[in-house]
Image 1: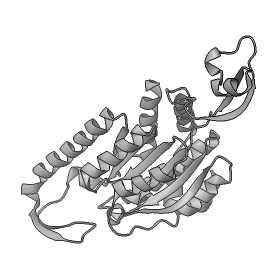
Image 2 (image 1 turned 45 degrees about the horizontal axis):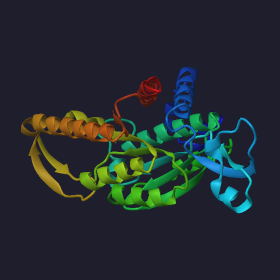
Image 3 (image 1 turned 90 degrees about the vertical axis):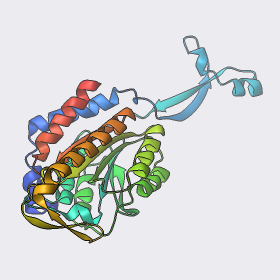
Length: 298
């Protein structure tokens, strides 16, 4: 944990230190659950041919080799036992928002990403980092060695928001660079065009990738605690609109609940994990509860 404190600013390091032994055990169980999931053994690499011998499965016979040589050969494959993870963090301008919490949405996402990186590497699973706004940005290729953690954490300290979000286009770019089926952990407020976003995520899932969407909102974006006459500003376009809090509050809360409910339904039906969070929740507790639920499914 010293590496975490060295590379993250103090308030984030303090949050990450909240990951105690119980949380580590939960995440280890989570990763073991992934290895035992239907995705286990899906990624195999050809190793070599060898002559067929008694006890081999006839289904493994290479009939092309037999046609050429008149001898029975079987193909030998080696399964990849590790799951490769990618942490994908939204750097659009809206991620810099906070109303009264100590962490912005980006800070909160960094805490989640740093914790998962630390725990995946402790499990010897390779993990990498990508960022996105209108396109992919920084990229740390997946590695499982111990030196990967300070590499990722150092990159996390440099993250800055800029511009709008094109999650769909960014995910298409990410899909093109993935060599193997992977575990994609996406951290975003999802303030982007809904239909293209859902299509891009479904396409990734249909390609065999395992996807977890951490939908990170500020506490005020969920509860609407405002009062009086307001000027509501779009965090990505800068446009403002006058609003009377007493009239807008109930309708806003209904709309945000409906939005999260729709995302949960759409993504769950596509076998994508949807994790709604807001910055008032202790991130380690929320992460542990989610991982326990996931582990129990496998």
